[in-house]
Structure formats: C-alpha cells, structure tokens
Length: 108
Length: 112
Figure 1 (cartoon, each protein chain N blue to C red):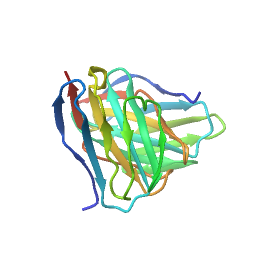
Figure 2 (tube, rainbow over the protein chains, first blue to last red):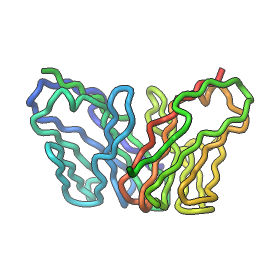
Figure 3 (cartoon, rainbow over the protein chains, first blue to last red):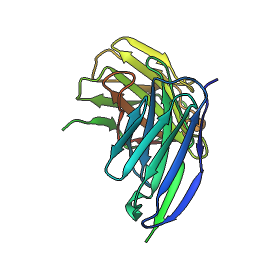
C-alpha cells in the first residue's frame, strides 16, 4: 500500500530562519504535490514535481526519485508562512495519497 | 477568473436526509476529485474523475456517490448521511491527472 510520511509533524521557527519539511513516499510516483493550507482557509497548490527542483520566490521544492523523498524549503521565513504544509503522492490515473501535514508556526 | 466553486460553504443536516454538494470549474480541466479532511487523519480522497463519464474510487468512497455528466461539474452525493460523515470537504480540479491542483474553498458538513 502506498504511504506518504511527512516530518516533522509540527515546526516552530523564528522569523528569518531556514525551514525544511520532509516527505517520503513508498511507491514510485508520477507527480509529487506540495500544498499549503492557512488556518481556517482553503488549500493552495505550491508545487507539483516529478524530478529535480522547483523554485518560487522563497520556496524551493526538491525531489530524489531514487530515495523516494521530497523536501520543501522556505528561505527567510516570515510569520505569513505559518500554515499547514501537505505533500501528496499522485500517480496519473490513480488516487492521490496525502501526508498528514506539517504545521509551521513562524513568530516575529 | 479561473476557479473551482463549491456550494454550499456550510451545511448542517440530519442523519438520513439526502444531500448534494456541488463543484464546478471553469478551466476546462479533465481531472476532478473530492476529498475530506478530518483532524488527525488529514486529507483523504473520496472519488476522482479523469474525464466525463469516467469516475473511480479513492481511499474512502463508502457512503458517497459522484457523477460526471459534464466536464465542468462533479457533484458529491450523500444518499443517507451519517454523523461519521461530518467533515470538511474539498473539491479540486487539474488539467490532467498529474497536473497542479486547483481547490475549491471547502464545504463544512455537520450531520446530526
């Protein structure tokens, strides 16, 4: 059975710190999604990647296919980055499997 | 504006009373899907659809029905809701199965 594990479950940081959230999956993927959910809010797609690295502003996502591992990095973290970050393993034509999420709190 | 629209945002109902949560997208996306989100369990996929008249079960399909008669609409039907279906529901769409997801704003359902 495909499983997606995220770590850490909770993360507290000071403004300006470099943040790393990890995601491991058990089955080969066609697409790994990173999502962001603010408190009481909707869900936004940050990245979808199947190889290498993607960057958007202060956010960077990487994936290592051989190790079945992906990381989400936030450089120069800010209180507005406080949210739940969720990774999901998506194979085209099959169901999406989600990690349980990482709750990030950034204080100023 | 490109968007996924879910209705209603909030719904309180009683056990056994059939209900439908609507989901519509205006991006001509092929892939649409439904999820529920519960504390401690995270997001779980209920059903997904790769295109019109093509639907398949996700992780937790029991107690739910879907249909995809038109490309833009993907309603979620609870024929006989039960309290364990109290949850936050999200609809999402994407261009293809392995494309970035666009989520609706969510529907908070309470079944008493």
